[in-house]
Every structure is written in structure tokens, then in C-alpha cells.
Amino acid sequence: MNFDNLTTALLIIAPTFIVAGGMYMLIKNMMERDYRLKLLEARRLIQKDMLPLKLQAVERMVVFLERIQPENILFRILQPGMNVRDLQVDLLAAIRQEYEHNVSQQVYVSVQSWSLITKAKDDIIATVNLAADSLDKTEKAIVLSQIILQRSSAGNNFAGAAILSLKSEVDSFL
Image: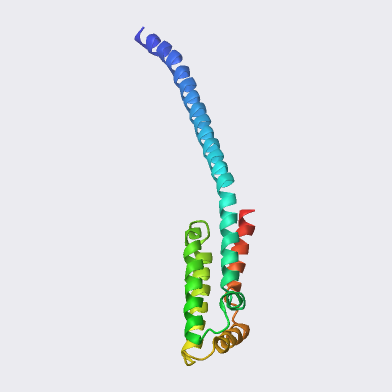
């Protein structure tokens, strides 16, 4: 009798455990799938909101790089009657002001692109300073501008690598 009760109990309990185990696995898989779908949807929403900000940051950084290129900044800053010292100070101030205006954009661009942007800015500043240091400070500013343009046209595309990096970032966004 004892054996019959045990067998009956096992016949009742075993299918219950099998069904319960199957239900557990089914519910667990459904919950994991729901979690992954919600996570994917959240990522899509974030990307949808972030894409315009990232594109705007890339645009602003390309404009920054173009604005500080020697051939562009010299035409904006150079005024008749300036001497070397005046032009050097005004160029450095303009570059720093442009940089400070755009520094927050580093949040939206890659570390690699930001380091190339910073390097381009630093290289242009170094070129201005080296050219100015080679001249008398009271000499006409046009001489400094000519030296800077010669050095920049001698294969020094300061912003080229940074702009290429930014373009590849845009390609990865889209």
C-alpha cells in the first residue's frame, strides 16, 4: 500500500513539476525578450534624439576648423596699419575664442576626432607663433601673413585629418 501511494503521488507530482518547469522557462524567455525589446527601443529613442545633436556638432567643428585655417582667419583679422605683434595677438585671440565657443561639442564627437581637432588648433597656433618670433614685432603685419600662408601652403593642411575623421564619424551615424 505504501508503494502504491508513493507511485500515485509521483504520477501526480512529476507532471506538475514538468509543467511548472516548462512554464518557468517559457515565462523567463518571454520576460528576457521583453527586456531586450524595451532596451532596443530605448536605444532607438536615444539615437533618434542624439543624431541631430551629433550632426550639428560635426558641422560646427568643421566650420571651426575652416574658420581657423590660416588662409581664412588672416583675411578676417588682417587690417591695414597692423604690425606683427598686433596681428599675432589678434590671431591667437580669435583662434582661442573660436575654440572656447565650440569646446562643448567634444561631448558629441569621438575622442579621436577631438584630439585631431585640438592638434590642428595647436599646430596653427604654433605656426603663428613661430612665424611671429622670426620677425621684428614692429614690422608690417603683411609680412607675417605671407610667412604664415607660405608655411600653410607648403603641405601643412592643418585641418585635413580632423575633417576626414569627422566625415567618417558622420558615415558611421548614418
